[in-house]
Amino acid sequence: MKFTKEHKLFIIVLIILVIDQASKIWVKTHMQYGDQISIFGMDWAFIHFVENNGMAFGITLGGKAGKLFLSLFRIGAVGFLIYYIRKLIQAGASTGVLVCFALILAGAIGNILDSAFYGLIFSESSYHGGLAELFPEGGGYATLLHGKVVDMLYFPMIDTYLPEWLPYWGGDRFQFFKPVFNVADSSISIGIISLLIFQRQFFKTPVPQTEEQPQVAAAINSVEEE
Image 1: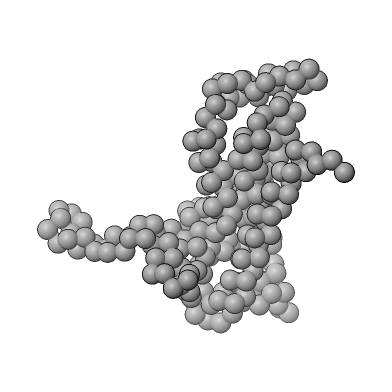
Image 2: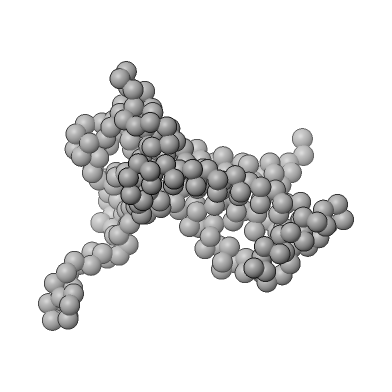
């Protein structure tokens, strides 16, 4: 069996999804909300269990309506990414560009799974209130598309207090890097950053046309030029 570009990209997406979902399920069922475990004994790298209702790095939209809108937006974005990646393959885009988009797609799907299904299959995780149960008898903690995204990667590489003599911020606590995120967030960030830094030619050079799909290449080039 010959592996096509589609097969290779599917494998990349599948591997990331397995790692993302396995880590989230393990944290959800083995840690209480707010629990923290040091990674290899380091004082700046932790597994820290939190959940959020919104986008990457804890950004949120208000209320149930905002949560529903965000979930539907994610689903629409995933549909567009799949469509766009297929067009890129047909137009002969480079492997590097395709891998970047595959990373973004995998991360988007990973967080959609949390939002769509975790509320149905898990019990609530309360702050230091016991472990969540998978497939609880009484049902999950939320309805379809209203689940919370599980975050656990926390790397406060700098955690200190600013000197008192500093105007305005003197004595305030300063942390870098403060957000708590997950494997899906990391995949999206790596894909976008790699695309911007290592695949800059993608934004400058028209996607090469193929004899079979000249209209596809023309459409993609028009998108890039906007």
